[in-house]
Image 1: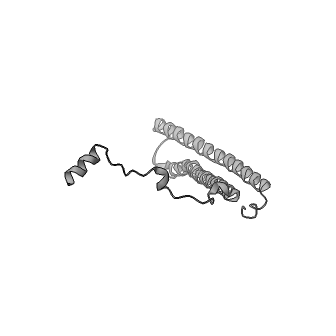
Image 2: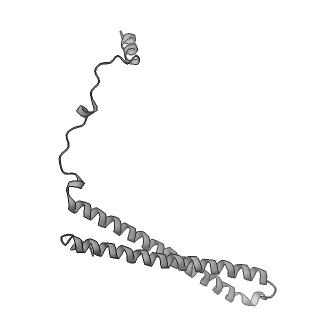
Image 3: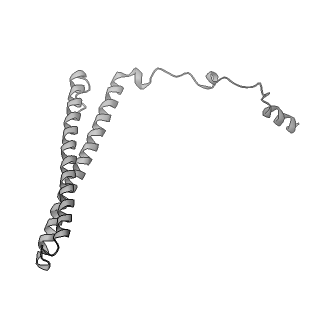
Length: 138
């Protein structure tokens, strides 16, 4: 008997299939799309998350920007141990890397500040459009 059931299932002869519409229970009308306040709050949360990311990029940019300062302070502290003319090729290489880091840090800081300003404008736009939500957004 067990072999017969298995062979029927393998052959696709099981007629007890339930349609997919019968499996899904009917949903109520409490989805996020039917509540405009929830959609607006979700949009505001997304913008605030992007602003936090811009702040993290700003922090990283400041760290990258300050790194050459520590390298130069190290070189100045040990300047009695070497002559610049003797290690000029290394000094130029270190200077080029430090200038690259300063450029990268400046780029990250400026881009982050511009993005944060953009996000602030978006949040103020949401506040103007939806006065009920504005009390929750700083």
